[in-house]
Length: 301
Image (cartoon, rainbow, N blue to C red; front, side):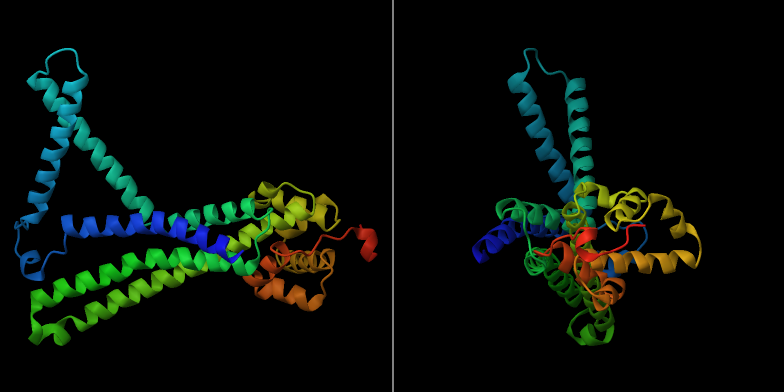
């Protein structure tokens, strides 16, 4: 079990977290931070903002033209060469923009973690515990943290070189502290999203335990209607959830009925209400089974 957790965590952490780390290094090399002394001068562009991209375009153009020349049956004209170069460069820019959006989006880590959880479920007889889900998620997040550490060290080093030793604490202390604060904030946000993901997964498993399709748990309104089926209440009572004040009362009642369906008491209901990211996984990601109404003597109307 431990080997499987470590294997899957390292697999997704190294592949995607490592890719994100390499992408960050290349981005900072290609486009390093602009020193304040240069940024304040109008119409002055640092040399690396045109030398590196120009070198990149030349290399890409050479690759594109060489590939076309090897496969084409006719000679390559000057006009065709220009068109191929422009199309190839535009394609690279589009791909880079998409990667930038994907890699720096928090949902990217969420997607990778979900993929890791799915593989663990598949290889562990469709079962993953709350503890294992957290461990896998935290290991993956740790690999993505390498990017933040590198960004902090690199930018801190550049700032120190720009201002010099005598101004290091005087002018850059706030900047470095703000950078640390931003990265710590992102890290906490990723951990919160991990718990949100686990809660959604557990909700999915609760539906499956009750004999429903798991994917129905993530469809708004429809999942509420099916939840009424799970707690053995008429579907028309879903209208109660759209009436102010009454919706709060009825939602608490439904939550209590969910606890009863899994042989839990009112104390567990309070946990579902106030700490859902912990208590819902304890229902869904566990061996606790769904109980039929006759086993508990619960009214079905």
